[in-house]
Image (cartoon, rainbow, N blue to C red; front, side, top):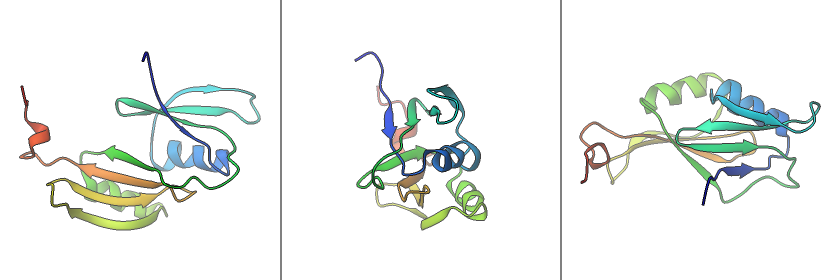
Length: 125
């Protein structure tokens, strides 16, 4: 494998692109295709998310795991921006703090904070 990215085919690509760019705040890696209906690829931490389409139906069975520095602050910012809230922040049994929101098509975005004392923060070598 030389590279990879998640492909999302939303019902309304322009609406979803605006959400990921303007509301979620992801940086655009590149745009491609015709100017009237461009596809967009966003930086997604150490991965990429391509939002292009349109898809024939609402995506289902998919979730994006997005690590953030402060789940409570990000959840509140997104809630205030009108994002659909699925679940408030809480500490999971495995020690991560998670909150769930949805994109315009209902794709679950799992916002994750790794606490300072969590094993994911320590070098396991």
